[in-house]
Amino acid sequence: MPTPLSRMLRPYRGLPASVYVQIVCSFINNVGGMSKLFLPLYLRENYQLPYSQIGLLMAFYGMGMLAGSFKGGSLTDRFDSRKLAVMALALSGLCMLLLALQLPVWLFMPLLVLSGMADGGFKPISQRLALEPCAPQQRPVAQGMLRVAYNLGVAIAGVTAGFIAAWGYQWVYVANGACALLGTLWMAWSYRRLGERARPREALRAEENADLPGPWRDRMFLRVTRITGPWRSRPGRKPRLRRTASCPSCPCSSQPGTLRRALR
Image 1 (cartoon, rainbow, N blue to C red):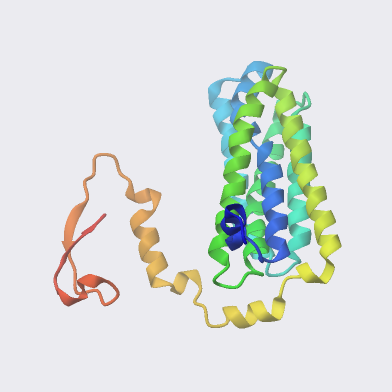
Image 2: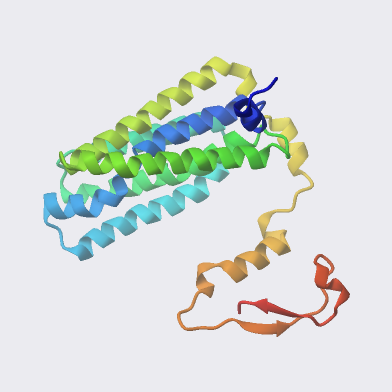
């Protein structure tokens, strides 16, 4: 007779092995991933930089993350996602260890850009490794488990990073780099052990994606992005009602001219 615990864990069993590899890797990586929150304090206390320069350095990290997020996903179409994930996470860990050293201030700019590219590029690669082997009905479960691992790691990091920072801000970066490199070793060992079972399914992926529209041809995606994007949130602007034609995909289709609330 199954126990309550086994019944509760039943939906999370039977997923492809790559999902569990990425869940463990995401947890290990995010347990030490709170160092960026301490970067302004670290630069202020150790280098006595003005807040304007600190903000500029943080902007360089953000630009690196933006570039890495776009490029990381596209590179998986050309190269093995497993190798890309290992390289990105290893680069992120090495950058964190370098940030713990007493470097000249001018070196922080290229180092933060490189670190942002590694951090931003790893996320879409990890998502692809976890979700691509899943059947369509398994993907919501796999995505949910990834988010739980991410949030649990961040929650633990918020506590541990505060205690580590009491010894010195540089130790926060040492801990972050150590966790990233540990996650790299776990991923490399796991995929080497799994071998062909974890190889991306190139032919099947091409066949599945052949009939899927790209994001620029998906009208619903573009409409939701237009309505919910950050450029829509203007201070003091109120949403207004707009009269639209009947919508065949929702219950209001039987009432033409229904007033729908839409942000404009």
